[in-house]
Image (cartoon, rainbow, N blue to C red; front, top):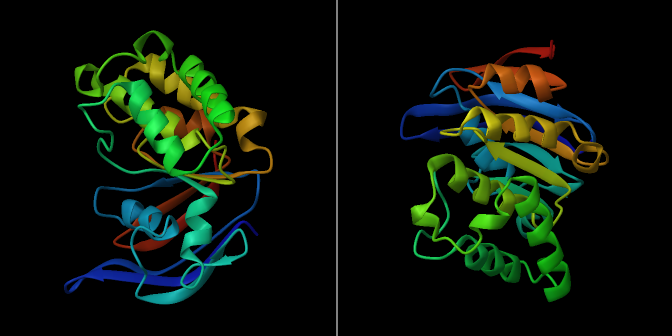
Length: 219
């Protein structure tokens, strides 16, 4: 089991964001987290990415303990947070290079991966452009390209098509379905994009008020 978490809880003050969530994801699955704003989707992804600690529960990500092995989990995880994480003062090329070097990627491999992810998202002509000068969809593409740089075993994406046009959404669906990404890898993404769910998810997990209320194969 690539992801196996049980009875995970997390509160902000007196408000429970996750209330005993159990989630199991096999390698090769593409699981869509759906639900209204505040349902717990973002909090669950942040816990799985070890950006935010859970307050209770147990779990593993690719065999690493969610509480004791957080550095190991981060090393194998590509995480796309909500919002716009890139530095607007840097060019897209500078940002991707900076993030790749933080992951200690060898220079030759980093150059190859930058070319591959930029080509896939149509970013190659824009690599020399400052992130702040890009459109919302282009900035989102840069952030997703960063999450994919190191070819992670686990990919966690928070609203990957937010603010993007239909072309980006189609590229994202094609990427998630591609054997190069999904085989031997686990993908969990939160989204309000019903078209992306239909096109890319193998399973849908619905959350309400911090609880899993339904799990179904994607239609």
